[in-house]
Image (cartoon, one colour):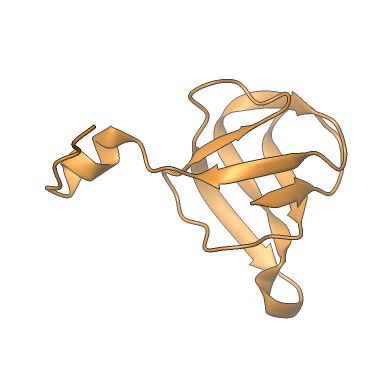
Length: 88
């Protein structure tokens, strides 16, 4: 999870702070203002303990400042790429 550190207007780059957990490409991004099916394309982390940075996602977004977002849940296509079977 993380919080947007600035408003985003029709951009694929989302500035973050309060990053909690490990980020990786392919993870699903969700939260208020984030389109369904949005995934992480690239990551930049800095600051003390890598808690500040930004992610680039696969589609432009418009998101307010200080919005809590969830970054997680690897899409099933990623599991299948690595040979794992997803049972739901």
